[in-house]
Length: 294
Length: 255
Image 1 (cartoon, rainbow over the protein chains, first blue to last red):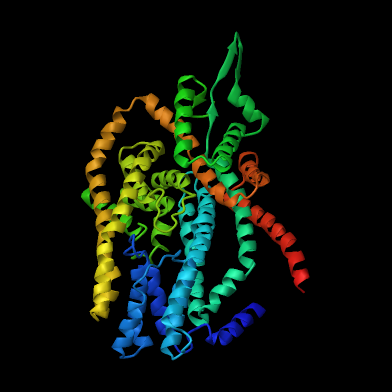
Image 2 (image 1 turned 90 degrees about the vertical axis):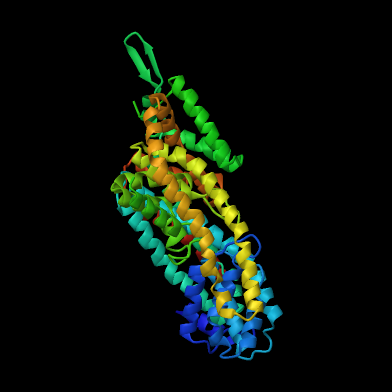
């Protein structure tokens, strides 16, 4: 409640840093969908998402500068530059661009073209980093891990769970970030970047992720030891012994070894896969490893 | 595989590729139907065996679960790996180990497509500059729409052609494989999820001691046989206690 009030207050105070005051909700929505759909459509080495910024501003140019073709052209010309961020959690940055452009169009003299581009360029990097580490680095793999745990035998619930939960989180969240950026202008970034809430939420998500990854390791990874010691009537299977100490002990040990190699020793995925292939070939021909548990 | 099935695979494969705009950009595209687990479900629907599709999608998903694609660099491409690897393994009647074996080289092919696209699209960037400078603002704003053609061509046609013409070839190859090869691939495939999971651990595991949480999850499944939702509830509980214990002193000192 108080948080919401703070944000309201923040927006009130935001004239100097450039936030849209009079831009219609319809125009903001148009810009939002524009960005969401087209951000990576002509990805390229030189400008990355730059052309999408031009498209977004080009499509709302009549809302910013009604009938003033020269001002519209000038606005698009100053965005013929490199732009790259994480498009979804970083959607606040194009939002801020729209907010600042709107403030300039509304006659705020402090918002110079140089200022707009400086803010845009200063923010795209931090939000690319935050976005990548939170979205494909945390939220998506954790949701996918939960989904994987729900469909060990190909059940539909797994993928359906992922689709519904992911979109239910992301659609409102990206709209909030984008429209907040439009209304609060450059202040928005400061608020988001300085808040400690992000770190705490990330910490909690990582804890859930660790437990869930342990769980799907148990349901999906297999390492079956088939080596059997035979002496007369006595036959002892090493895999059975290890599993009777603790269910799944061979996989758990292999997990720790892989953790040590990949996380501590920084082995690449390719190198580790190659090692696994060698282990599979050697283990199979020596009769140490089998396809399924004895 | 019928031509119509290959056509549908190519269409959805394109819609789920990283630079495709049609499904709210990456939101319902790359990050939803582009995730191999979801791709597997759609492929299964197209080929008439949803369960196998999801099982194979899950196998590829695990390998690439920790994949982050920071601006412009592409360590691996799950698009061809899923939309070509899964259907070919399915029509050959092979197990998920063949989908995985196909996924790795296909991923490299996909990376080539990404870099090719980023080079070709330079044409559209300069076209847009010219249009803005000439005052043709409507046309300039349409460039991302027209420029999507590069991505469409580089995704739709490879998926269509390799699936349609490769199906028989892969079926014959799989049938020719001696059992030893299949067995070794299966042992290999059983270990592979660990590679994906540990890539993810690099990001979420901050200290070695946190491996205890990993072990908790492991034991809950292996020893207690709990289902995923129950495990998430327990994990939420641990995360909440952790949140409380770190949050409380901070707010006190602020007051």
